[in-house]
Image (cartoon, rainbow, N blue to C red; front, top):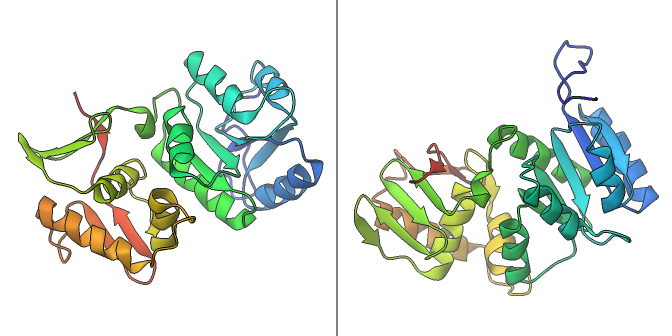
Length: 249
């Protein structure tokens, strides 16, 4: 069985193994070459059925999974994996634009998603970010109902947030930003990415609306931007959730 993180590059460091699943050979050819040059080992499957079969004889560190494929599409493949209690990280390659569809994709077990067409460099960045925040065999943060960081608790089902025992008032968009950042901790998230994740590009609001909601969050969290405990500004790039996030019990 091909296990993850076994091969080493010329520096002696291990190379993560990626299972790339897409029915378009032009896509798999281009991405395979790029990801290999970016420090990953890559195996390819061309539909969901083939991917599930490959997983009986290999253990990838992450799966890049296209949604629109014949025989077994990406979302059903993902559902089957999670029903088997297989929590290998998955990045979906999608063509979805609605917020409800994006939320559904994450609730079904995707660790992240990337809209086609995309820059291969962005995919490599997302892969590294997902690998940093996930652990083999452990449920990912996005699949948890309740998240905690210090005194902050976020209940994703009831859409409520608390500091200690006190509920804090948040607008729906501010809650969505907090939820997204807590499920992507220690990751630089641009304003554009937050717009895409929370508002969707069908609602072309200005990027400064993100700053307004971040200010709202900082106020209710009593989070000093000069000495943050939760949300850090990354000059010229965006924001990062810096606290350790875990499951709340």
